[in-house]
Image 1 (tube, rainbow over the protein chains, first blue to last red):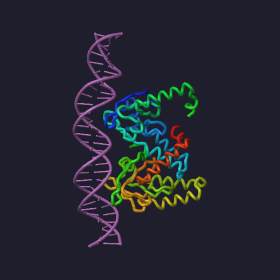
Image 2: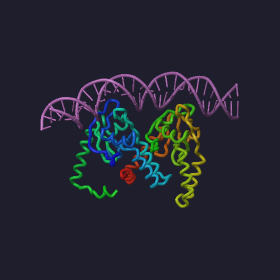
Image 3: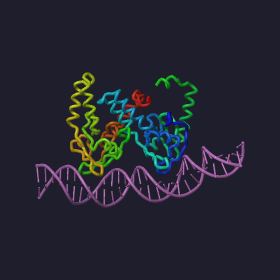
Image 4: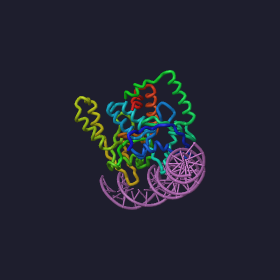
Length: 154
Length: 154
DNA sequence: TGGTATAACATGGTATTTTATGGGAATCAA
DNA sequence: TTGATTCCCATAAAATACCATGTTATACCA
């Protein structure tokens, strides 16, 4: 049993006409230790798909319950937005998932998908959009060094 | 046995003349692990039906008993409305439930129903009303960033 | 180090299962 | 009996699991 569970690296795989795409084997190895499926949803801020293990959403559900009132509009809106958009995906025997039309359209993915590790979660981009996004991030970092403290402090 | 029990995704199913509608298979799988039935009631604030496992109402009842200050008298009244309105629904062998006239009218549902996952519970909308509601939420999120932080911070 | 054998992986195609949904029979209540 | 409700069966469509093959990466040996 491994100690760490981080999605790493950037991998490009093909997407076929049915929307099927192989989850990178590294990712699969991680997922298989804890579950049989992943959860994907449209990023709220960028044209990409986000994926994670269901545990992460479970934790989010608990956090929302604890920080907002049961009857509040905030809780209502948040849960609709997050859980209404998220969907479970299981792999077939060869390790592929079939992404939905909604997700593919949001990420503008047609024939290939870029998997980008983000630690506890990962993102799926179209090649075109990922090139732009990576440039944007690197430009931003040059101008303004990130504060490591922010990331550590969580 | 799974670890998590979240209602996810947004699914549209048809409602026939008898008020029958298929519960999405994902939802059914969750329900079957813990129970044989779900509980539905009219939303207090929006024109939709809310559904959940009886456990959630059980928890709500307990929370109200244990919190003297947390829930105001008004909120207590609201819970009375919920318990008084809630009703159990079982599915037939093909996985359908038959919604009552009262619920269908409240949600203005005629021939199709939109199931929206909300984590521990879910909602059932008419297509027309759901489109409006989703727009409202996304507009609000655009203007109100703090909600986003909650999501990203985990 | 270089070359080969082996295993793992990605990917295309096909078969099987599951699911949604319409129609009708059986059950129950009034 | 009539009307309503629940249950069961049939079918079409969609989702998913399985099989086969070429390719890439890895392990092994000289």
